Length: 494
Image (cartoon, rainbow, N blue to C red):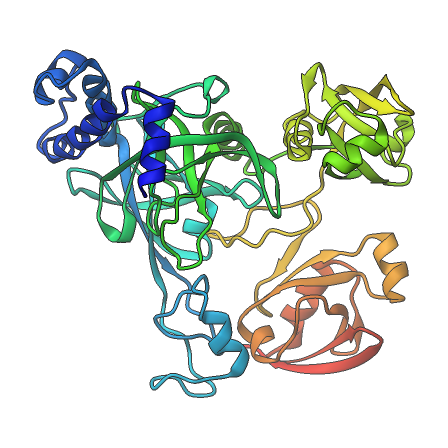
């Protein structure tokens, strides 16, 4: 602990004054719940007791907490196999589920009680649009937003993007307070930032820390250049804003690395420019369009850099190229190291994914490549990244997708198989099960099963499946292919 404090003082001689400023934030929050009049910078300085100019700026940031909200969620009840009162995100959930350990109020065919969760968010539009995390509102049946003045509003999920973990919800309101947005590209390691949210249900709690890194990639996440901080972020902070000391939102708190589920000094926030791009698309079209070039990449370490003749580890190493994909047509080959896109350097491989994903399909991307010990340039036409699965449930139904559909009576979400997938599966079926619920879940239909027919009639499209379901009555015999076997599975519709 002492080592960390000394490190902060070394990086910024004004750290003690900044810590005083952070304390002033907590005091200011108590005053923010009494009215809608946000203090000016001068008034903030007076509130801070004139401790320092830094304190005034920090308290001004706290004034932006007016637009920070608490998001409460009631998740949809799951039929069978659930653990009442235990969130699926809990580390012990999978343990109990996998080993079939029942709870006192759950029988073999019991129904899980609705799971309640909470997170944070912030208002970006005076008409009630709010940004939060996708995992906060995933599988939500009811969403309630509470403002700092304790008013409550039911919220509607406008859309959610699983890849970036950004969701947009809306409440019916006018002239609501909004946050001011900053520029994440100006962030530097060592700068002080503040998080405001509802950790452990303590609404409008403020915590402070410093930026550890920008454009950070984390395992399994290649589409977001995360802002890494040591700001104390805990369960309930998810979806809340990360402020700079000018009171501007520069990120959305999204992830923590922890062995206990609590703060351990490593927190990650989604840059606000990434979030706003997702927000605009979700509001406008209900979906997010991303670019792709058809390559598999990996990071370049010191040994790889040396073997390829690079001066230092940098760029994204191409390990494979999709046949007939955009990169293959442009001449990109395995072993190439992509050093820049449109003149913007690629230091870590995750930066390539985020930059390409942000490009509009159909545009040209200029790639700087390292090949055979020298730099080359290629132009690649960016294609659209097709989403094959959407695991977030939305209140009022799932967003329409060109390649997916839902047989609601059966409790199935399916999508058409691609020709290559049909060949690999050696099947005559055309519909792949992606999600199950209701009757299909009770009948133990599994994601990955292939729908062949219903009541002896072959089906090849979502519409044919829905029409056959409506004509089948209460009892349905669903013919499925699971691996190499074909079986009939009986379902009883409600």
